[in-house]
Length: 155
Image (cartoon, rainbow, N blue to C red):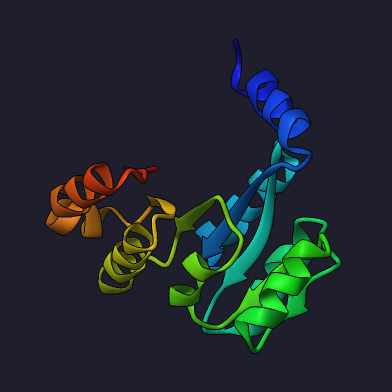
């Protein structure tokens, strides 16, 4: 069975796509957001970047005109429940939001490691694109995720 078919079957079962949170809305993050938005069965529901306008622009460029800049977790949760995309300034808030997986695309090894650690300690699946973080602390993060029943992977 192909991924598209499996994702669509999962969406049918749950009544919603896989909810993806993205940390980092630079060049790589923006491209990733656009790709996820085109994939059946996946949806970007939250984006974190220290430059809020970059996150909003990345969502708009991907066809999402419904971004809500959320100053609180409650506002972000409500936006996501309403089917809108939440924008937050702190990626460490991501595992507290209703997301199924967090994809880290910050490009900053220290931030990437913090995001992964925070996700794992909150039992949230996480995928890293910042390879420098994985080569330094990846084995530890992987062991922690395996012990806690969450997923840690690199893209």
